[in-house]
Image 1 (tube, helix red, strand yellow):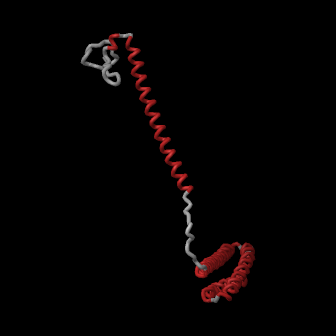
Image 2 (tube, rainbow, N blue to C red):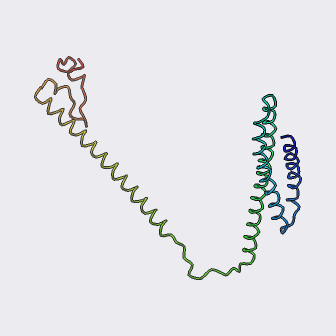
Image 3 (cartoon, rainbow, N blue to C red):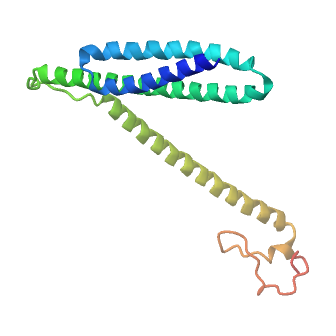
Length: 196
């Protein structure tokens, strides 16, 4: 296991040194360097699988240390893989920006036509729909208000009708106001009022 570990460890350090070449390589050689690094990373992953198998076959007193060393190598290789992907992503974004810039610079612009129209039909329809809904809500609130006023008037009518038969209770209500009110000055000793 030890020779394979040392060989894999050496490959990891070689890849780390090759990662610096990515920044300095020209556009034609860049793809070759990326492919070379990716191939080395894939080879290291296959060596790591073999190392995991060998570390599980180590004697019990060496097994934990061997697995720890293999896990550290695996972490380093995954870190290198992530760094390569990040570099490729930045390169793709930079190339796309360059293509868009070239496209904009090569485009010929002309003046607008004289019959340029601005599509506002959807906005106007939306605005008129909102106004209709607003008026509908106002009508709904007004209808509810008139219903409540009608119910209040019916309540007064029912109370007056119920009290009409009992003259003594009828004297306790003031009919000159909008709604019924108890008059304590008219009949201070009224025995029919529930509050007395």
